[in-house]
Length: 360
Image 1 (cartoon, rainbow, N blue to C red):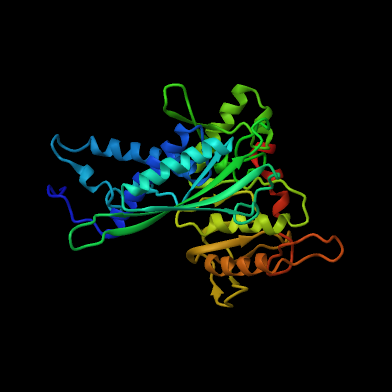
Image 2 (image 1 turned 30 degrees about the vertical axis):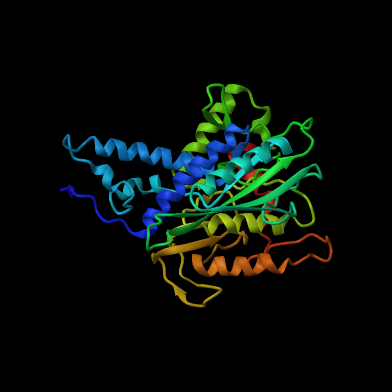
């Protein structure tokens, strides 16, 4: 039976709900100023919208008058659609001129004032955090919106912070949009942009830097649906294609960022893959604990050695990979940064795009 009275919601639940509503409002502010939203927010909205429809279908199975939407934000209720509750960590948004970006930040400041908040904005180097290779005609601003909600006579209110990465094109005659021909994952190929009636659409970017940009409409639509199906199934592909000397460091950082998310997508075209049941009896290279055949946990199978698969615990592998990427080992013969497994074979992340369905 569904409880008729609304349950008391935890501060975390209320914070997540308010944060998502705030991000949705800010997203629409930016799109109204001709901004293009891209990255994780778009990906999460696609996934969350799909799972909300599953929750809506479940709601229809109850008697009329039973308001199960009181428990919409309860992740333990109908866990099959728990991804309806995805909340973005930040917003990535692009503007094609300084003027539109300034107008957006001005409106953002007015929004924050309504919630006893403030906006902090400052320029950062283009290479810091974003790992996109952009020209000198771009500016990267980090914007923080700090707000308080639930203020009373005796309580100052709950403080939460919203983070935006704003990319600005200072040469509008250079026509480009995110991800600036340098996509990292297939799940990040979508953007939100304004349409004629003042609303917005979610579509594939025109500048993915992949074969999608040159595909016919029909073939592109088929690829688009495959990418969305993969996202809903919790999968994505790593497709960053760069031959720079530092490429493997940037690749490793992007991969780690995905794998360390609370709601991460499994990357299916790397030289390692995630499994829940070990098919091999081995010793974890990092913690040296025994892994028995048919053990059930979170494991990584490493396929850099063509003769034998190496298995380790997922948590151990992530710790190892973080250290390996951060040390920036440079091959003295090629002067290229390399990322190697525990058996010192190369992961070759920069070649992973060749095994993506987009390149077959």
